[in-house]
Image 1 (cartoon, rainbow, N blue to C red):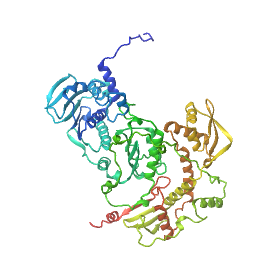
Image 2 (cartoon, one colour; image 1 turned 90 degrees about the horizontal axis):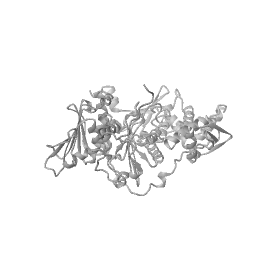
Image 3 (spheres, one colour; image 1 turned 180 degrees about the horizontal axis):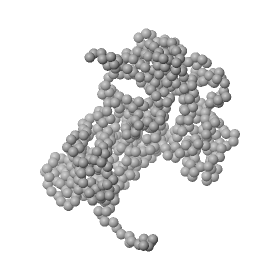
Length: 615
């Protein structure tokens, strides 16, 4: 057999094959069918949508809505490729405000399944049904709205069908798809049936109630709201506290203009906000919606619309990180006492709102404050505390000056001056257990405090606040030259100002070399070449970097750990009370620098249950 393939003439592909190729881009499993049909139902103004599955959606998917419906004479056109009522020009495409607009979904689904489309408008005397395979139109009975029935998905493409998972797995993917869409469209009621049995049902209502219905009361009670708005941008949602972090990233919901998206830059910004309170491989939980002017985002970059391209992703990354960090900063002890009220009672006070607001967005450009480059700062460290040769007394004196105390005296030794009976979130200390835990009582019951972890967080936050006000870079006596890739060199040239703000003076020496002329003073003695590689990788991927900030904070965390009050040290009641007051005044006091909890509340109800009181 010849090694040279026989040349075949160039020719147009058959329409059916074209549609099947398009289906491979849009439809990969029953959940994708449900996603596309739900987008159409919401665009049609539906207020109630019902999804029915048979065999996990492999044998049948039926989506019923009460939307505007499709006129009988337009039903055949609805199954044609690139036929849509959503856009008619490039200008409308660039400002598209609907979920579906490509005109591919119905045609693609019909090419790989047995599809039946039934619809009725408000003015029609009866519904009309179209059988996609035969093209037959016939009268049907149903109220206003549309029903799409998809049977035997991939029956004519066996190779694709073999890649489908078990019925239960496919059903799970469909439920997750419905959950994502329901979260961001609370004005629509949704129900899901599987093999004739109800699987999920969410009534139309407020965004707060929908969030609780879909993600549960536990998420609402253990999360913080975030909200921010300028002329063309609105960010709203909730971020979960570190205590509900999960081993998998399966409770991370990010929406842009009503669409669930996966965007590495935005996800990185949210994850970076947890650097100080969440360690290891645990994943944060959040539900965040971004409403942005359509001309500032390109939604037409992926067939399934799960990816978007933002005009200024770097600025949005920084803003998301700042908002999430601010939401996580107040500890429960510094805001309000732990309440025994249910999560539902606190919902009306939350600013969480995922309803679309694109119609209200103005046309003026974003304010300069939003577009300003990130203000990442390097620290000034005039007396290098990391020097192992520093004598312990000198080191203790330097640390004491830094945290505003005198050598040998900690904040916990300041006597408490609060009057008896004052309503303090963490209450009053009553005892110490084995020199490790502090017991306190508040109006809700018993508070348990890990004194070393709590004092460590207090010192750490104080170190960060004091050092953040002093920014200085240190010139290197001997500049470091190191090899770099073409992408790193391009990033160094494009992000020179951002690198200088981080204390790194990087210049290009050639096609494959960079020269480092200055470093952050705080990180003297660190592996600067490795840090440069990490910073350039972050800047290339996310447009911003917190590598140096994390390295600085790691060093401060180590210092705070060594300076904090040690276990097995006996504290007096005034010292214990002083520590509780410091915790109430410190940000992120709920976790230590290693992500462990610093205190726990046991309510009177919990204590009564331990001793079977009231039974």
